[in-house]
Each structure stands twice: as C-alpha cells, then as structure tokens.
Image 1 (tube, rainbow, N blue to C red):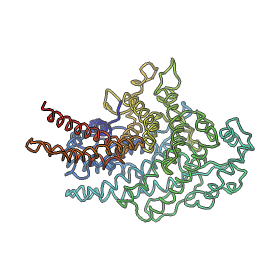
Image 2: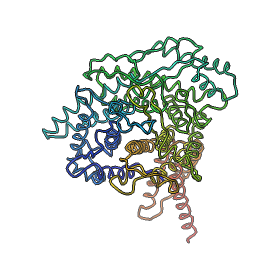
Image 3: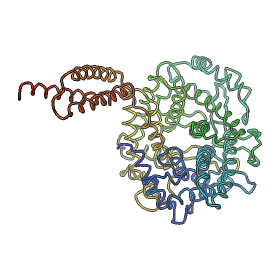
Length: 616
C-alpha cells in the first residue's frame, strides 16, 4: 500500500474529529484525565501535523485549506477550529495540574500490575512517567508555536484570555517536563562478576570472545565516553564514583520515572515542588527511546526559528542535549560492538537490568541507532546493515510473514505486548508493569526515519518497500465500528485467525499518535530531493549534449513556409532543453525524460524536412 501522507492524515483527522468533537467543542469522554500520556497523545494527533506541515495549518483561519476544513468540519468552521483547539489544550493543562499548581505527569491507566490479583493503587496511578515527560515536551512546543501565530489572528476577547493563561501553563509544564527528564536520567555502574555484568559481556562477546577480551574492547571503545560522563554531568544526576574505574561496566539512559534519590534541579521557573523520585537507578531501553524522541524536538529548526524556549529552558535543553548525545553514542557503540557481527544482529536482544529478551528490545536498540545515524550522517555500510535488521524484525514480528498456528508472537508483540517491570514501584504498592504493544507502529516509524536518511538507491528502495508493507499492516488494524472507527487499534483485523480476547478498552492513542507522527515524517521524506543517480546523470548529460548539437544544426537550416510554426517548435524545444539542463544535477531522471522528448521532436523535424525535399 503506497503511503500517501496528505490523504491518510486527512482520513485520521476526520476520524479524530468524529470521535472527539460533539458539535459544541472538544469532548474528552469518560477516559479524560485518567492518563496524562493518553490525553497528550490525543491532542498531538491534531497539533503535531498542524504545526509541522504548512498545508495542515489551522492557526491562521485565512490560510486553512479546503480539504482540511472538510476533514475537521465536525470541529466547526475555519474560525472555530483553532479556538476549540486552544480551549481543549487549556483544559488539558488544568486537568494535569495539581492543587499545589505543580504540573502532573500521571501514567494513570497505562500502568498495570505484575500480580493480577492486586489492583494498582491511586498513589501509583499518579506517578509521573517518562512517557508523559517526553510527550509533554512535544505537546508544549507544538502549543507554543501554535499560539504564536493564532494570537495575532483572533479578535475574540475570551480566547485571548485563554491564550494568556494557556501560554503560561504550557511554559511551566515544558520546564517541569525537562526537569523531570533530567531527574530520570541514570548511569548504572556494575561489576563484571555481577549478573548484569555477565549478561552484558555475553551479549557483546556473542560466544566468540572471552570475557577478558570483551572487557578490554569495552574499556577501549568507551574510554572517552566514560570520561565525558564523569566530567560533564550536572543537573539532576549523581554519577557514581565507580564510573571512574575502568574495570567496571556501565549503562546509561532513562529509568521509567524520576530516580529515587535524584537531586532537585535548581530552576527559577514556577514549577512548584519537585516530587521525590521512586524508580530504581536502572535504564530501560523503551523509556530511553521515548526520551530521545522528545528531547530532539527541543533543538529542532522550528523550535530555534520561533524562539520557543526562554533563557532558563535553554539551559535545561543544553543539559538534556548532552545526555541525548552521550546516550546515543553509548547504545550505538553497544549495538555495533565488534568488528564482524553486530550484537544488534543477534535477535532477540537481551536486556541486562530486567533480564528479558524480545524483538521489541532489538527494535528499541535499533531506534537509538537510527537516532545516532541521523545525528552523524552515517556511512552506507551502517545503513545497509540496519536495513537488514529492520527487514528481519518485520519478518519475525509476523508483519511480512504469515502467522503459524497458536502463534505466540501475535500475543507477545501485538495484543498484550511486552510487559516491562517497573523497578521501584513496589515501594508504594504492588509491583507495576508497562505494556508495549506498539511494535508495528514503532517499526514503521524507524523505517521511515531511515528512509529519509538514506541516500543510497538500493537501501532506499528496500526501506520504502518495507515501510509500505508495514503501513499496509497498520492500516488494516484501524477500528471498523463503534466510537473509535477509523482510529487504532484493532489487531484482530490484521490477524483474523488469531485467538484474540476482546475487551472494552479506549482507543489506543499511543498507536494512533505514532501513525500520525509517521505521516508527518513521510511528508518530510517526500519533500526531500530525490536520490541522485550518478549513472543516470551521466546518461542525461550525454543526451543533453547530443540534443544541443542537433538543435544547433536544425537552427541553421532554412525555415519552411509554414506560418512560423517551425520557429515556434524550435523555441519550445530550446526551452525544454534549457529546463533539462537545469535539472540534470538534482533530478537526472526528469532531465533524461525531457531530453528524450526533445530528441524525438528534433528527429520529427528532420524527417519532415527530408520528406519535403523528396516532394512527398
């Protein structure tokens, strides 16, 4: 199924408007306020495309395009749409602000328990989670950018008052989310003889090297990174003294929530008291990927161009950027450790801290590698090997291969998902877990990112084919009846033969938001210049040279008495040839096609003249 970002985004918006607008305004429904993550994802399904793609902008009613208005007609006319969005976002900020005026980041009903006989306590449901911190950064930046335009376009006094309130609340939430991410970052140091150390050494050595050899390579590969962490870290993280000992192993990344004992981050912004951390000092691959996704929005071109961060937030953003870069370098180095086979290619990945293994964790490491490849503009070799990993994950995840009878993969990756224990949550109730069932959406997202990055024709073609196959799988999983029709997630429609127990759940805003985000990325991919083929450029250049020579020869021939049609044809040929010459470097295929047409027209002129000379 070909990915058509504009058409598919309009379909999603139409379904979202049908679900979330009741004719009077935004309707949160019975699940509102029960998870800050879900509520933020739901708003981003509208705000993210509306602020990232010019053709989908609704912040200036005078420029809102007709098909966008038609898709969102349930939300009102072109003047009501941005006003309703401002009102809904202001409601979100109020819902997720505590009585002490502190922004809250509750995981809510996204939390589950490892012990099914016990219920999640209300105190546990209110724990802030990295998913919410990261999603809030993206939402707040989108909101601030939206308000920057819309406040100059509206004359409604009530909306202007709401905008003033919303801007302050959004800025406070953005600062609080950044502070919380800083306090959730961890550097976990452990001994080579510990269970965690042995798991990491086995993962890196892959049974081909002794632990001593692996440790020596680890020391050599991460010496500079270890020094950078020791020397540069501040703001919200205590670096263990053991990190300076090269005989110790370490991992870095984000825990699932703020870490127990994490120091407060000093800030002048009015974000209220900073809560005590609860998570163990163990990085999680899933939450690390989530954090990296949100942090990169802080230094995007749009954020910098619009000046969305104040001075205090810029300082926090720099601290987060340092962790963003160090984390990518670490996990990219781990994924590509060794000279021959990468640990990433040994699927499924085994986590050291949680003692779990799954294709989902392989995808998480691949996602961090994709971040790093994009950051440093990777070599063709790294890209090609990563493409192969993505193709294998799609096959193992039963996306590009058929399921077998009683296939556990469908259950483990797509319906129930991977259950991730949240270490430290047992301090205030039963042990919590976080379920990840968005494997397909995450695979699609990373494939499109790689496709955008790749400038190799063969790799780009493989990635595009894979992206279309995964997207076809995702599109089949849309809900087909009930209030969530057109949104996600109905796994049964992708796996009709699987035994899937249906239960009443809200729309999966996490998967819906990820598909929406993918459409924005696909739009950016198509906006890039096409990949330039050296061979095609040489052929087009040769054709242009031949056509220019033949045109010059034809211009020296006496013009026939045909009322000026011959001269007009020559001028049209000259214009087309000039166009081909201007495109040959960026679009050699187009230049090639234009020049072939020119050569055909020139040949027709020659044959017509020869026929006239013969008196035919």
